[in-house]
Image 1: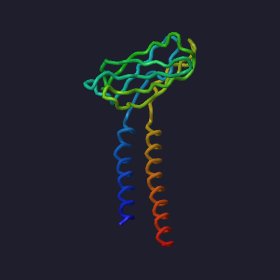
Image 2: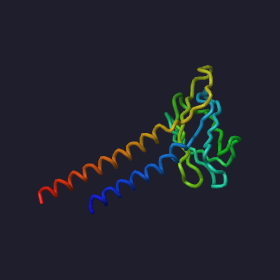
Image 3: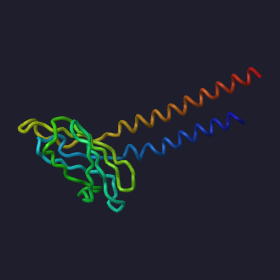
Image 4: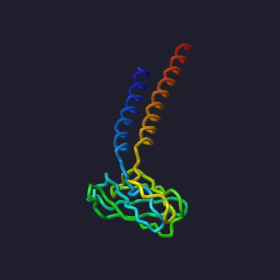
Length: 161
């Protein structure tokens, strides 16, 4: 009877991981262009945010920034977007993490601020969901390992008895 309880608990953990993984992997934030000179403009877009659920918040962090940018602008391809002017930014790479108005995460992306006359602007940075897939795999592996260890402990206890 106890083995059945362990298996049900492991199955519930795996099921929860399977349900949560696709939504995390599909969250998408895009920054275009991927690099811009100091004083340039980048467009931040959270493609999975529903404009009806409220404003998107883009959290920008980097060498000299830790700020939030609020967006109420509907993006042409769907989602919400905001423009960010990079005057006063230090050269380097910045990370943008987006949160939708309903509190769901919309992923993250990066962009680079280059010197004026530096590298040409790219086509846009995009998160590929690799981190979400790794987190889901870790969750599944931990559930399986925990189940195996618990079963071994139960067998050892029943052998002693």
